[in-house]
Length: 310
Image (cartoon, rainbow, N blue to C red; front, side):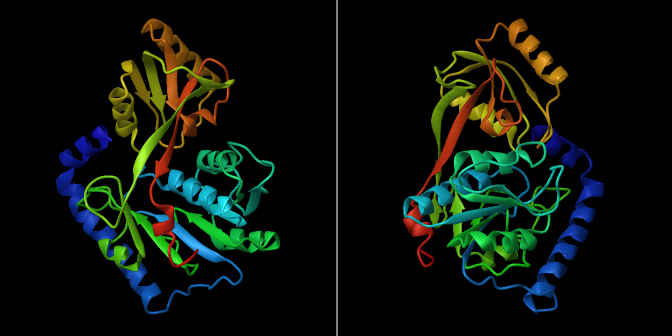
């Protein structure tokens, strides 16, 4: 993230005009939906909850989808989650999990989709065209369908539009905003981790795990990950007292090769670290001994968040 900011600053004379063009295109698309030129489909039989943001990068959308799904499941509802097929080998609509067993893993589906399937009892579907995935879900008769990263997906009418907000001023590629700030007016509920907003949330650490289950917190670690906001992950580890002897960041949704894992294990040994540490999102793409991951969840008032649809 720091490298991105550096290059954005250096290339500002070029990137800033491009960002204005990007904003114009995004705004024009939203306008065409607002006036009905681009059509929105109303889904019968299930309430649609969309979780999204207007900023590129990791803001907590996937953990929030997991939290909402688990909360609704605890109330006895049948819940389905639709993810996009970004970086997945299979782009067409398919059922990843029927809520009881997982049918597809990474890299056939992407890391976030597999992660959601592992952490919920929801029926999970993946598709580039999420409307086709919702159609595929109808045979399960879900009470609720959650759209992961759904703010920019306007083909489907939503019963609840939730947006996680974060501090950012400029649009892509000069900044990190990927949607017009006016899109926040379409949102029913705004969530933030810092600052003032309608619903405050916080990330809670559930502990450390490896292939065999829960393990002790390491005192030191060599850290690696391929997430949208790696600096936030590093900060969270430092805050809980882990000495970071070194780190390596990969691009978001990166799929690790055997050579990558061997190199990372060598770095762990060379830095004399107690653990080779990563996120759960990364671990689901590896799932082998010798790697520890930190599990997290989002804590907030789900009753208030879902008021009006539950």
